Length: 184
Image 1 (cartoon, rainbow, N blue to C red):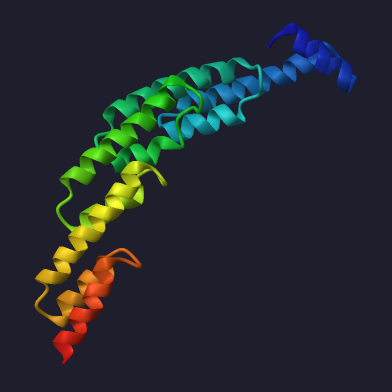
Image 2: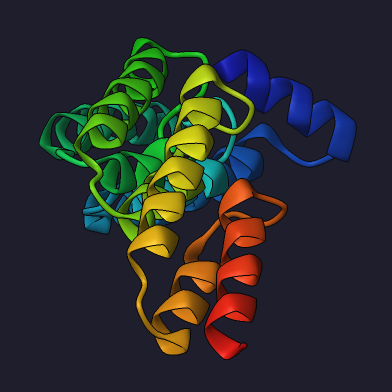
């Protein structure tokens, strides 16, 4: 711990600098053990947040957090995997920018690959809200839902297509009409 910090804390609390150093040293050591035990982004983020400011544990935790984040981002192969770690990486860092770009790129890839309303709904739910890809996923979701409604031959199939279609969509309107036709 920095001697200036120890002296400031000592002066504010009216405690001998040696006592302050001992207390801060114990806190740093306890934090260090949490940092060393952390093996996931979530665990190391928590250790970083708990470590005393300006401590060695805080610095080591950040370095480990960054390294684990890079590893996890590289390993993520789906939009869901990236989405799950998006809020766990250090904000304002290069790895945070990379995770956002990868999230968008994987979402684009998955929108293109989706062949069913259910598949595209999963992509839509995970796509960056309000983004172009989010809007594109919604449009494709409705289009695929319309196809599924048109292909439905029974009330059960129409109801299933209706349930999987976006709210207030062309597909839901079509499903209601088709259900009425099948029931008449």
